[in-house]
Image (cartoon, rainbow, N blue to C red; front, side, top):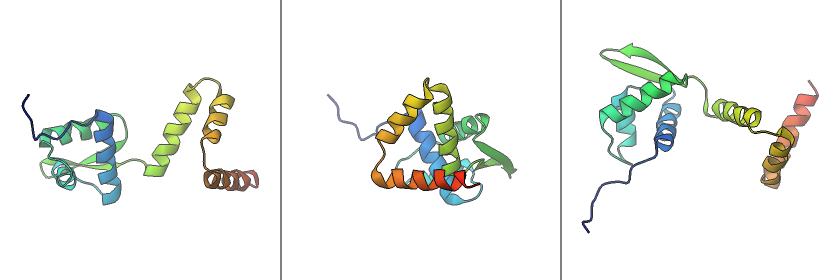
Length: 127
C-alpha cells in the first residue's frame, strides 16, 4: 500500500464552514484568491474549489457578491450568531414535537448556558 502526503478531503459542509469563518473574520468582502490565501496555512485548495463553494453559498443566499475587477468579492449576509439562530429556528420548526426538542436541547446545556438562556428569556419577557 502506497503512502500519500495528500491532506484528507473535507466534507463539503466542513469546507463551507471554514470559508464562512474566513469571511466573518475578514469583516469585509474577499475574492476567492483572498479566501484561498487565508485557508492556505491549513490546506492547499484549488482556486476553482474555493470559487465553486463561494458561488454555492451565494446561491443559497448566505453570501452577497459584487465585482472586484475580473473576480467576484463575497461577504456574509448574516453574522455568525445570526446564522446560528436561523439554523436553530429551522431545525426546531422542522424537527417534529417542539416541546420534546426544546427539552432535549436544554437537557444538554451546561449550567452556565442555562443561566444565560434564563437571562435572555427574562429580558424578553420584560419587553
